Image 1: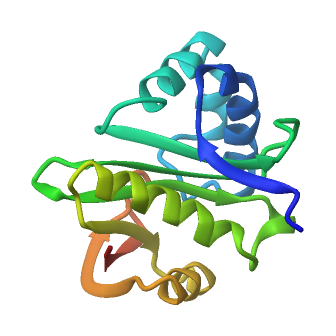
Image 2: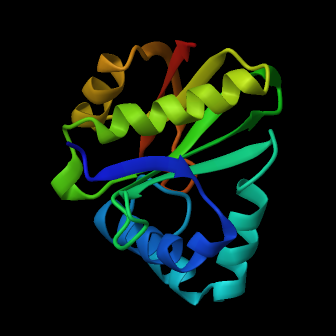
Image 3: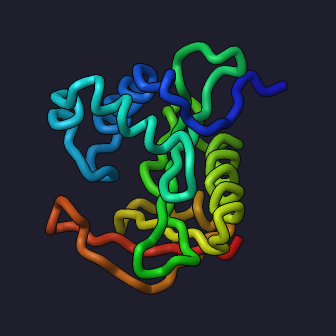
Length: 170
């Protein structure tokens, strides 16, 4: 029996999300769009506001994996947001699993939560970007039905790196 669940964030998750965000940035600094120092310097109210905005609606959503009883710590996160130029597509962002939960079912459940939310909002495609060379992530997303589109983009914060784009129909 699984002792964790996946659900959409609520404003009450702000403190736990801040802790997970700092862990994400310490563990995988090239995968996200801010540095650990920037995230650590952000006031707690900033986290609460972002969580509040992502807890309802069809524009942006964040999903967390954590203990069934709602306790600590969180073990994973995935977000989704509208792709402005493609109203039928959701960008999957800030995907992270704690090291002890990589390679299991958590990633699939988080991506499924984003997909379900996306479909409910009328969007039937998911898109994400992965740093070129991160073969483990590419293989994990391929197992979930994502395919490399062949599109390569400069990394948004580290110009020496390139990202590859992957997409999946829902």
